[in-house]
Length: 294
Length: 274
Image 1: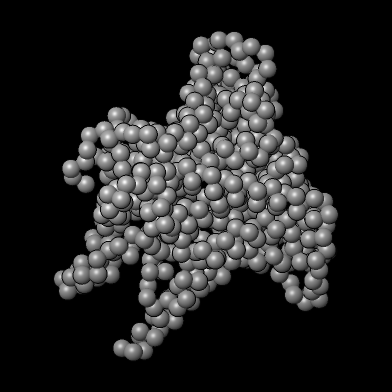
Image 2: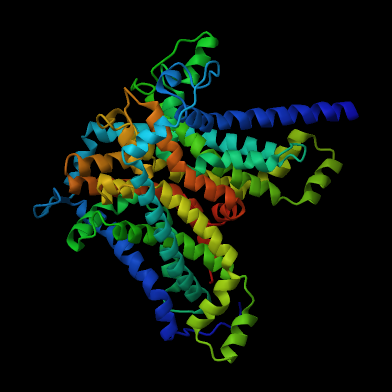
C-alpha cells in the first residue's frame, strides 16, 4: 500500500462518493443528530415544538414504564447472552468434529432461524408454547408438570422473547465460533497433544485463548442484537400493546405512535442509542485499530 | 481400540443429530400446522393418526390479501438490495483508490453508525417523510433501507477491493480509462462473488425488517414480515392461517438462502451485521 499519492482528488472521486454520502447524511446522520436535539423538546409531532431542557430525561426517571422497559431489557440480556455464547460454542465444537456425518446439513439447520423474519419466529414459538396446541406443554405434562399459558401470563411471557431470540440468533454465534475454530492452526493442536495435554487442558489453554477474537465478536454483536429486541414483542400487540413486556425499543414506538409524545420518544431513543454504543465500544475500537492507516 | 472409536463416533453423531432434529421442530410445526385443519392443530399438529392434509389455510390467507404483502416484500427487498449495492460499490472503490482529507474521521463515522438502532432515526424520518410526501411510498422505505445498508456494505466491499492487485488498475490507467470506468469495467466484474455475498445478506435482512415497515408504510403496503402480524391474536389465534402466512413469508428467503448458502455465510461472517 506504500507510495500512495497525497489527496489525488478528481471529478471521478466526487461522482463515486456523492450518492453514498447524500443518502447517509439525509437518512442516518441528520436524523440521529436531530433525534438527540428533539429530546430536549416537548412535541406531539404536529404543533410547534417547545423547548423544555432536560425535562424529558427527568420524566423518564419518574416513569414506571421506563423502568419496566429497563428491567425487561436487562433480564432478557442477562439470560440471553451467556446462553447464546455457550450454546453457540458448544454446537460449533460439535460441528467442527470431523466424525460427525452431514455437518453441512446441520450447519444449514442452525442458520435457518437467522434467515426467517422474527415475526414468523414469534408465531412459531407462540404455537409451540400454546397451552392447548403447543408441544412444549404436552412434553411437560408427560414429565409430570402442568401446562401453562406461557405467553398469556405476564410473569412468564418474557421467556418467549428469550427463547425466540435464541433460536433466531444461535446460528450467528455458532457460525462465528466455527469460523474461529477453522482458523486455528492444526500444528498448534498437535503440539499440545505431544506435550501430553488432556482434552480439557487442550481446550482450556490452547483453543480457548485462540478463540478470543471470535468470542469478542459474538459477545458484542449478541449484546447489540438483544438490546435492540423489538419484533418479538410487537408480535404480541394485536389486541393491545403488551406493556408488561416493554423494552426500550418498544417504548420509543409506543410513546411516538400511541401517545404522540415525540419529544419524549426522541429522548428515550437517544438513551437507547447511547446504551448500544456503550456495549459496542470494545469492538468498535478493535475494528478501528485493525483498519487504521487506510 | 477400534471399538472405542466406534462408540465415540456413534455417540457424537447421535448428540449432534438429536440437537439438529430439535432445532428443526419449530419449522416442522410451522409447516404441519399450515397444512392441517384447525381442529387437528388444536389437538396436536404432531399426531399423525387420522391426519388430514389441506391447502385451505393457504387459500384463506391469500383470499384475505396476503399475496399482496408477499409482493410488497419482493418489490422492497429487490430494490433495497440493488440500489445500495450500486452506490456502496462506487463509494468503496472511492475509499480504496483515493486519499482525501478527514478520511479517517469519515471512516470512524461509518464504523460507528453500523450499530445505530432504527429507533434512533425514526422520529426525524417521519417528519421528513411527511414534508417530502415519502410516507407510505415504496421508494421512501427503499431509500432508508439503502442508506442503512451502506456502512457495512462499503466496509465489506472495500476490504475485498483491497485484495485486488493494483496492476489491473495501473494497466487500465495507461490505456486512459477514468477511475469510474476502471471501477465499472475492471473492479466490478472481479468483485462479483463479494457483491453476491452482500446482496444475499442484504436481501434477507430487508425481507426480515419490521420496524421501518410498520412506521413508514400503511398496513396495506406492509411487506409480509409485518403483514403477518395482522393475523395474530394473543388469546385466540387461528393457527392454520397464521402458519400458512408464515410459510408464505419465509418461502423466498429460505429458497434464496439454500441456493446461495455459501455466499450468505461469507457475507455474515465477513461483514459485521446485526
